Image (cartoon, rainbow, N blue to C red):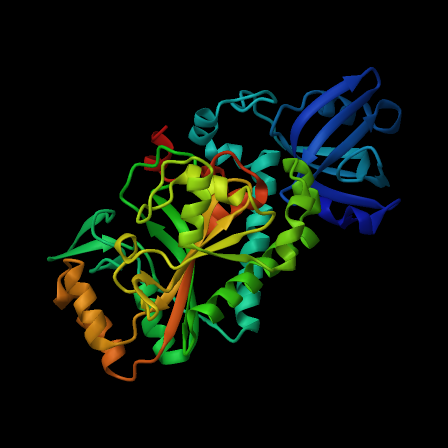
Length: 432
């Protein structure tokens, strides 16, 4: 019996007759030969139908196929050194399942807005396919890495009643008779998990009620946020470096085919797998910008052009450490050597992609944290449960958050961060 296989498994069946279920992405003919560009969700490759090798019915069926037709094929797999994939199939039989015309995404250039409006269909194309395969590798690498490091997955709620990073970017929701907000971060709840289990990570959707008009921002995105009890900031930076190096290495090992589809030079990612990230004090970053003639003063937060310039000085991510307290959230621990700074860091991706990680040592002292909440103008009652984490068995602890789509955008060298998420919500899609 002829075996049913996926395109990605073709290398295991060279010179064997196999069956596949596929969709058509493109077609061309040359007299008595029809070349079918095929996909099945695992890879893309070419099927060849030769008139002399098939019945008249099969040849006519192949001629009538339209873009995104679905069908079964039977044929023999051969090596094909000319293609990115390396294999093709000589088709001997074909059974059509669906064959409609009018598919809106042709094999030509389309604007990003048009493609996002047709995201449900655009996902089938080569570029989104490659991005989603790499995204999947990064997701699995994340879970594997933190499991090996002794973490457990800990789920934070989507609805929250208090803000981890200020109230100006919250989506308000009426939750029965109470005010609630879509999650801005799982961090505060993650800290509760760390006090219970030592090392945890949350991984899920988060929201920002701000316009997503740039190429680097979205109102909805995924965050991966570890929290670690008994860990200081330097140890957290070591962990961040190991994690990012491991995840990038996994992409280089498992996604060479997808990187080729994207035209991504894998050598640009190689230095990240080696670790050895520079830890650049905020003060030195300010001086670097000023020496370059940029209008930047101590106490300013870095904008995208500033982060881009800094990142261009390095061939791998760089950690900017110890920001002024005035530009960071209330929950961070102050630097004992300089109370104007927090013990925190942002990891900046190379090639101008900006911040991908942000983290800090958390303030572990009950009275100090209480004062910082009040100084931030927040309602102390909303954070009483958070203060309890310090009141009952508080310990030094640290954590960080990774913007998943921003990291994917850098790994894949994307122009638009919205390409890195399967379905940007309508509000993301509508904003230019």
